[in-house]
Amino acid sequence: MRGRDKFSRFRPFIRAVTAVMKPVPRPVLRWFWQWSDALPGLAGATLRYCLLKRLARRCGDNVMIGPGVEIRYPERLSVGDNVSVHRQCYLDAYGGIEIGDDVSIAHQSSLISFEHTWSDESLPIRDNPLVTGTIRVHDDVWIGCGCRILSGVDIHGRSVVAAGSVVTKTVPPGTVVGGVPAKPIKKIREEGAYERSMGS
Image (cartoon, rainbow, N blue to C red):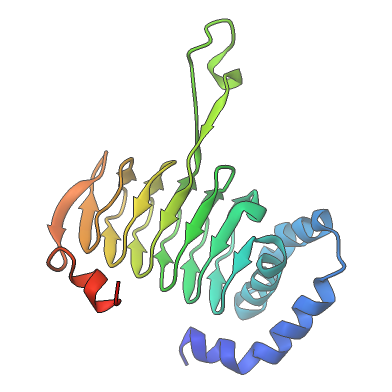
């Protein structure tokens, strides 16, 4: 049974759990998140989904969050439908993270929506001001394991980020990128075909 089929089957239960969580203060919900890894398999994934529905700015249907995933500033995180974020990923949404539909983020990847500055020499670099930049992962994107997606990056639709890549610049639609820093490797389809198929 596919994940979206399981989601449809358990939708009434998920709605009930989410409703029960509605009056629970956010710090308590975050505490439950830390302990959700103690629940194995589907039970843990269901609890994390219900918690994310309450904590995130937006969370769509059929979102799977694996064990050991850390999400900072979830109130600045938006997630679409049919999304999977696999084990031990790190999402810091301080500057905003927007994830579209049908996105898969493989294990041990990081999305970091800010960076340090270093221009004030009177302060250690760690104490210099931060510069934020929203990360946007558009529909139908696969991010391989161990990738680093840095602030201000747009990964456009129908694209693949190869395992171990560090993405510092916008990824065009329908492109496979890889390397440190990530560069285009090949086109999945001709320029503009994805947008035409989506009616844009």
